[in-house]
Amino acid sequence: MYAPANTAHFALVIPTVRNDFKVLAFHGTEAISSLYALQVELVSEYPDFDLESLLSQPAFLQFGLNGEGIHGRIEEVCVGEAGKRLTRYHLTLVPALHYSQISVCYWHGAGWEIAHNPVPGEHPLPADPPWLSVPVPASLSMEMLHSNIYRYLWAERSDDLMRLSQRHDPGEWLTEQLSQAQEWGWSAPEQVHFLIISKLNEAEPPLIKNWLPHNGDAPQVHFERLFNEVKFWSGESSV
Image (cartoon, rainbow, N blue to C red; front, top):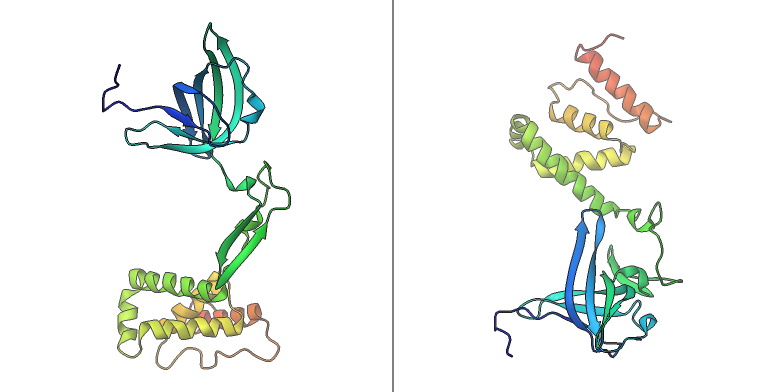
């Protein structure tokens, strides 16, 4: 009996293990914050198939009209009901993830890096994964900061930026201010914000004639002194 041309063909391909499995049915579960798992029901003419030979083996569950399917790794296998000629088997197919790899080559910054896994196998996710603490290169961090502040100024301070553009190129001006903040050790958001907004709205003559730090000034001391000077001369506070 021929199957219709528009009928999907179910098959489980296990390249490393010879078998005669036929797929009866399968169903899967998937959720946001968890990996998918497919439960596959199979039949075989062999009632005593070596189940251990299937564990951790790569497999492909084919279910589409054009051979589409899902790659994974066999995690669990068990025997079901045994009939006169066929025996049922149940297995779970899960994603084949990086944890079982021996080494990995990846691009970092301006070159390739290689990391080796000393103990390949299944391991729980560490509480503080080191790959989430890879520092951002200084040049990239500065580019991101420049881009974010530039968009903020056009969105929230467009009139001030338009007046500035009559005298300076806004992009170059912002680069100069960020370089100045970096030279003074001003990296906190409130310090960078204070410098840029103060310079953007700087009056003629300017409220502060000397922005340079005094001898021995720590970055925070330098910032607080100038911050209080601006508040005083703008009438927001008294000495």
